[in-house]
Amino acid sequence: MARTATATRTLILDTLGNISRFISAQDLFAELKKSGKSIGLATIYRNLQALADEGLLDCLHTEGGTLYRLCTTCEHHHHLICNNCAETVELSEETLEKWIEKIERETGFTQISHTFELSGLCRACS
Image (cartoon, rainbow, N blue to C red; front, side):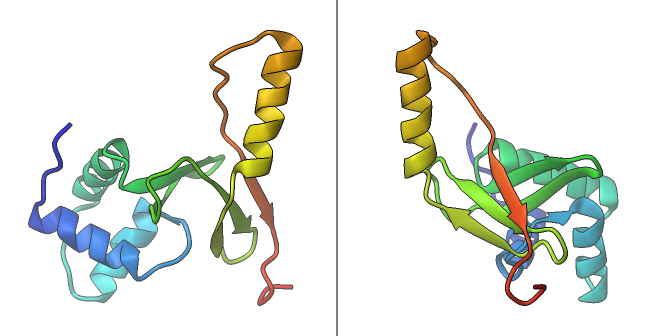
C-alpha cells in the first residue's frame, strides 16, 4: 500500500512522535484537543489503522482495546511496557528469535509467527 501523507496523518505522526508510550485512540484524541487540534475520533481511528497497516505504528492489543505508538524501527521487534504509566522500551529480539528457531528444529514446525510483549514497572513507577 502506498503511503499517503495527509495533514491528518502528519499531525497524528507528529503527535505520536512526542509520546514514548503506547496510547489509545481516545488518549490521542484528548492530546490533540488539548493542543487545539480538532480531529474527529472516527477519523483518528481510521488513520491509526491505516498507519499501522503501513508499518508506521506499533500496535498493542489489550483487554481494553488497541494501543498505538510510533514505530522507531522497521525491523521485527518487541516491547517492555510499564503497567502503570505505559512507558515503552523496544527490545532486541535476538534471544527470542533464537528460542523460536530452536522450537522449529525440535518440533518440525515452520513459519512460526508470534506476538510477544513484556510488562512490568519502569524505574519511575517502581
